[in-house]
Image 1 (tube, rainbow, N blue to C red):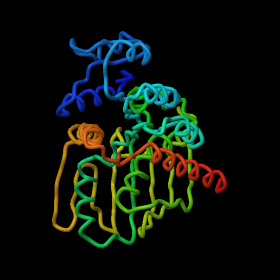
Image 2: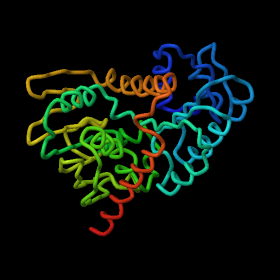
Image 3: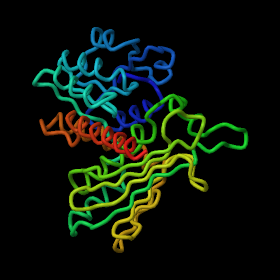
Length: 313
């Protein structure tokens, strides 16, 4: 595993729960942080080069900042390792295209896009496969993370301080997940219109966005907000199909079928399922649900949203 930041804890648990695998090493420039993540049987390194030179591994799991992804993916693939890379694959779609062009033809690279692996969406997708596709959707992801707490701090920035410095915020960092969910459930995505706003002065990027989307035969609106009063401080989803709310937070309720999950369990389960899929595909020489090329597609959609929002502004 490369990277020992916040999400690394969830990657680590997922690897430990995955049958027939061993997580043997972790690398991070902050070796003290890597040591905190590591168990006594894991080796700790400062970088990928040292890890490759001193361990025998089959796969590399990259959970580092986006600007480091391309170099790490290329290095790991050149060493003959299968690669799982956190989203986004690269800062821009062109960067992602350059990355894929630099890979050997035999490279096995999967994008770690875990939102689609949340249990509510997996359960809904299974039921959608047995029904006619809905005509419309309304997809909302809201939090109060960029509303000030009583002490003047912002919960989202306490949890992820880097968000304050992103010039592309809610679309790039969050709504890409939801575009992937729409693609997974309904089919090819087309961006029709978009609007973005910055409502919190503690960040430099947009913290509100609304996007008109067609996914397959289904059309609707995707909305994201970090400043919704009354919402929780962590982003939560609400998905309606043909006017009926089917997913609200961690509850699926559709056509007589109801399931409920706790947030923490569902959040970890999305990592578990994503990494289990990666391992299963390697073991069975099967295609990934989210190959590296899918990372380019996601970045193209994100770029189109920003372009349309700029034209609208």
